[in-house]
Length: 273
Image (tube, rainbow, N blue to C red):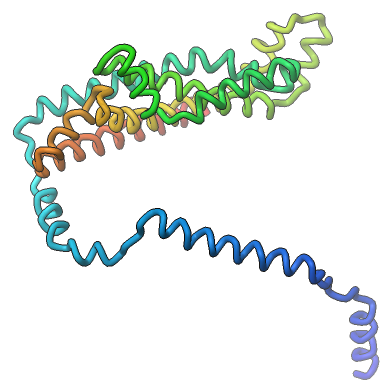
């Protein structure tokens, strides 16, 4: 018993003392926490957060909720046609973005092209990605007028920046051995990309494309509110006319469409990934 206690004490004495956080580090963390709290309070004020308003306007919310619980599908054919237009906007916006995003994604990858090429291309894609599709929609509406074409162009430019970033990250994560093998046999840069890079990144690229298409269907719905065509324009008109039952029907159609697309894309992912 005494020998066991002695052994435990020896082991405890051999263990290093727990690290002590320096005072400067603790003060820095405390200051950062205080700054975070101050920023949260400031942004709460700037966002005009007022939970009491939910209670004050409970009657209006109850009326709105009651109307939404009675969806009106009288004009279902109009809603379905608008939804098809929304899908068309998303399809072409995504397709054009992927076609353009593939070469830009490769040109953004540091392990495939020189840094002096990748850096400016990355900044160009950052600019496309930084501006929201709603802003692009307003720009293209001024250029080509109201309608779905402006929505397609808006999704195309914004999504190009997104998929180029995703594609380039997939390229930068590849195994370099196949590329080096092709280079060692005298292959050209183009052959390195086609036979060494693309087979490794294609499954990820398919997954990213499906994800962006699903996202663009939702975005195309919003673009209609600013005049970019699709079911968003119909929804905006119903809400401005206080036709909440019709608005509920439109939302149900959107939810069903997005759910069906999710099921289809999930099956495609299982097949190719």
